[in-house]
Length: 104
Image (cartoon, rainbow, N blue to C red; front, side, top):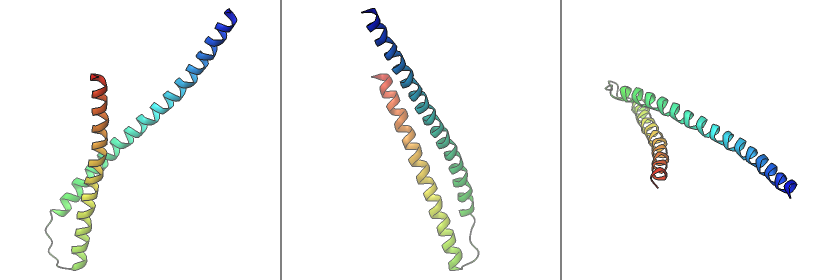
């Protein structure tokens, strides 16, 4: 009887160790992704500000090519803003879910 109980405890300990290792690896990967997203948001913010400064400069040349280039820059600025907003909303949803879990 003691041997059977010892064997069950040993199996459970080994299983707990294996699960803990996988949980640690998964948590590490999640933290790396979170850090990468935060760095990307910083880069996107800097690019957005840079593009906004360029778009505030008045055009003195009436070429259709230049107007098209400026419009492409404007669309790029909007795309950068869209991506940043999407990433931020994902982070806000996650933090909101964490706060709800703490309250509940």
